[in-house]
Image: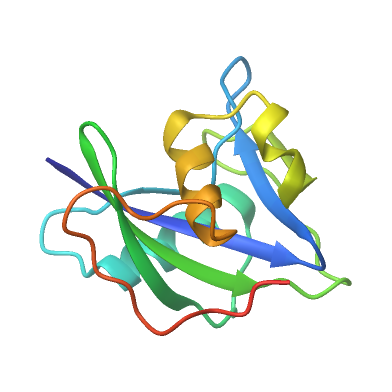
Length: 135
């Protein structure tokens, strides 16, 4: 099973999504390199994809997709800081959490946001850290 660091970037009642040129919208993040700690992968991927740095990331839960185990982190993004697409990412956009259901997003992104909003639970024997006050 693939291991992925996934980051929920939160601002007011919105979540940051990223996408490749013709791809679905997804949460920022990516695979861990061999021997890399999941938290380090989250920081690296966030920088590579959005150029966001110096943010406090908080581990919140694991989400098990069909082939990928997501280690989900959250970060609050100040209003005066905007993400800038970097590396493979060509687009960044803020979406209201309640609109994720109708957005063209990956299956895992939809599932992770449902868990965040209290509409579901992580798949499989997932562990959750302390609850996060989201909005």
